[in-house]
Length: 191
Image (cartoon, rainbow, N blue to C red):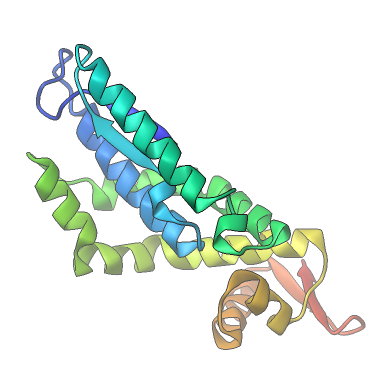
C-alpha cells in the first residue's frame, strides 16, 4: 500500500493527522513483520500538492519494490491458508490496535525522526509485545481453527511459532473458552 500525505508540520488544515498516519504506518509495519510479511509492502511518502514529480517517483519506486517482493504471501514463502488466517487476525484486531495506539503509543512528536526513533526503540517493541503481539497470535490461531481442527505442531508450522508458544496461547485461549481440546480428534477446535 502506498500512501501520500502533506509534509509534516506543513498541512493547510493545521492538524496532526500526518503524524497520526506516520504512527499508524509504523505500527502497521510492526504488524506486517510480526505476521511474517515484508514491512516494505507499506510506504508513506510526504509531499505537497505541487510536487507531482515526487509523487510519480515515489509510486514508481514502490511498484518496483512490490514487483521484487512478489505476490503477497508467496513472496514470503507463506501458504495461502496461513496468509488468510494471519490477515483475518490482523483485521479483527484493528479496533483494539486503534485503541492501543490512542492510549499507549501516541506521542507528542514534532519531527519524523522523533516518531521513527520511538517506533524503532526497545520501549515500543516492549509495548508492542505486551499489548498487540500476543492478542494477534491468539487471533491467528482462532482463524486457523475456524478452517479445521488442528494439532499444536500443525498450528506451530502454519504460523511459524514454536510448539511451546502455541501451547501457551492455547492454554490461555482454553481458559477464555475460545478453543477446546477435542479428545476424539486429538486436535484443538473452536469452543
